[in-house]
Image (cartoon, rainbow, N blue to C red; front, side, top):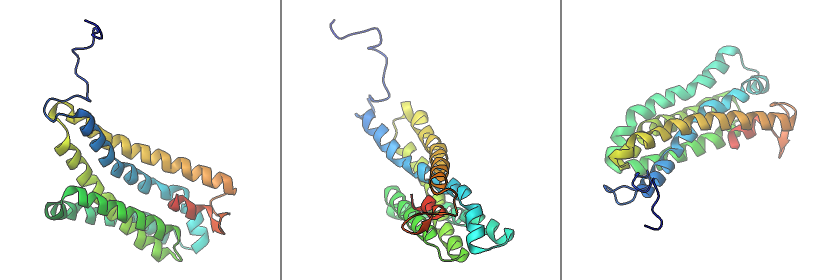
Length: 198
C-alpha cells in the first residue's frame, strides 16, 4: 500500500485512542510543565545575584542566607495549601495563580529597595514554586493518556532543570554585559536586578 512503511503500525505519542488526541495531551502537558520551568528559574536565579545583593544592601552573611533561603518558606506554604485550593477552584486556575505569583516575585525582587523586600518577594515566589511543584504534575497525570503518562510526566522534571540552566545562563550573560552583577546595565539599574526581571 502506498504511504505504508515498516513503522506504520507503531503507535506515536501523538496518537491516542483513549483521548482521541494524543497531540492535545502533549500540548497540555507542555504548557503545564512551564510551571516547572518557572520553578527552576526562580530557584536558581538568585545564585548570580548573591554577592551583588550583599554588597548593595551591606548585609551580613546570616541576613543574606535568610534572604536566599526564604523562598523555601513560601514553597512549603504553597505546597501545603495547593491541593485544597485546587479542589475548590480547579487545577488550571491554581496554575494561573502560581504564574501571577512568579511575576509579582520577579518584579518585586528586581525592584527591591532593601533586603526585607527581597525576603518578602522571595517568599511570594516560593509560594508559586510550591504550588507549581504540586499542581503541575497532578494536572499532567490527569490529562495524559495512560499509554504515554510516564513520558509526559517527565516533562515537569525536564522543565525544572531547563529553568535552572536558563537562569544561570542569563545570570552569566547579564553580568558579563555589565562587567559584573553589581554594575549598572540598563535604565540605571544594576545587572543583578535584571536577573530577576528577565
